[in-house]
Image 1 (cartoon, rainbow, N blue to C red):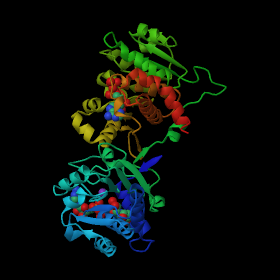
Image 2: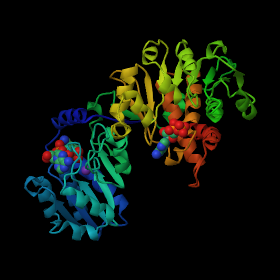
Image 3: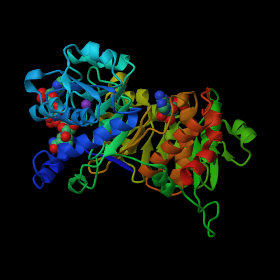
Image 4: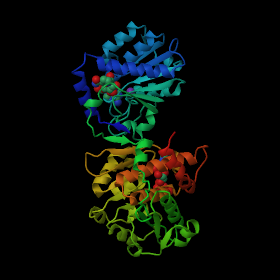
Length: 480
Ligand SMILES: NC(=O)C1=CN([C@@H]2O[C@H](COP(=O)(O)OP(=O)(O)OC[C@H]3O[C@@H](n4cnc5c(N)ncnc54)[C@H](O)[C@@H]3O)[C@@H](O)[C@H]2O)[C@@H](O)CC1
Ligand SMILES: Nc1ncnc2c1ncn2[C@@H]1O[C@H](COP(=O)(O)OP(=O)(O)O)[C@@H](O)[C@H]1O
Ligand SMILES: [K+]
């Protein structure tokens, strides 16, 4: 599992460790890891052209010390000083002592660079790149050089993953001690490129509960149900799907398709699309409705393609089993009914639906995804899965890390893809895990299924995502 901590916690941990170490030792650890990562990227260090973008803080210091190491190995290193009167003096002395130089014209040196190290800002940066840094960052991106961000791509908000203005776009980010939330959450995550973590020894001083966590395949594999000799279809869990309408029968079929691949022992469909569901999936148990009369289930999914059937939403929310609400269900739900539930509730909005639930603009939700998912979880007293290029899963209250999943691919942005996800997550929910575990496992499997279906770089349909779910289970359980 990758874990990310807030700046305040990182600074506290660094201070505790620094008090036990000689001056500058932590920066040396960071610079050594950074220089090694750069050396790995260059065909050879000797004779390569490296440009350092150096801001006013310790992030610039890291870049300068790493530049000095590369210069000692024969690289031609130029430093672009964005705040010459506030530069890290020891770092600059080390660079010039190793044969590195201060650049006269940033654009000249960037035009021929092989590698650019972005040390403009790290965890101390706020408010996007300053106007004087913008053309330099753009020139770096526009050059043929590989761009390596120091700790964070400059211009992002470390704690939230927001980008308030312009940010540098890196190919690789070398981060120190722990991930920062911005490295796991869009839009900042997209600026980071590949992320490499360098251990500088602060691990023991960080809190055990991170701010954000991202599951690996192995973590997800542990969350997936596995039938035992004592299992029967009811013990494995029955998931009820209240979805579809005369207008949108396909949503019911797709939600059932996802549910059938989610590990429940049986899928019970309730609603007006029973014929379409049975025609495609004869293994489904169908019922015309209402949900309360459909028979016992261990979890409900309500909402995909539901149209205006507010009664179905009310019925399901009144049940005493875990409930997932998606799509039309999110529009029709009574917030008080959600808050009053004693069994778990999982809401699965995309940014537009989240915006409607919060009474905010969609752009606001997209810009501040972490704050939005937390606000929704608190407002509804429910687990919330916020869809998008990084899927976030939050529980209400503090002290529980938000889960971030970036397994997906933009090819997943296709009609009906969310219906498959809700069926899948509901099916997992029926087998008994906590809502946040069912939600994060579903997001990961769905993302991997999308990747597998789109492996040849071709458009995919929602049905193909559902069809790729068995391969995604295998991929998660046996990544070998
Ligand atoms: N504290 C430590 O022990 C260590 C810190 N390290 C490095 O130090 C960094 C943090 O250093 P600092 O606290 O000095 O902070 P930064 O170097 O991230 O930036 C702070 C400086 O940037 C200015 N600034 C803020 N926002 C800006 C913006 N948008 N555009 C331009 N300038 C802006 C501030 O006025 C301040 O002078 C980490 O990200 C990491 O790279 C590493 O060397 C590891 C050890
Ligand atoms: N740019 C993207 N990158 C990765 N995944 C995405 C992207 N856009 C959307 N998705 C995923 O695709 C799915 C779309 O769901 P949703 O918006 O509900 O679609 P629909 O309502 O058509 O079923 C979600 O799982 C979401 O996380
Ligand atoms: K940086």
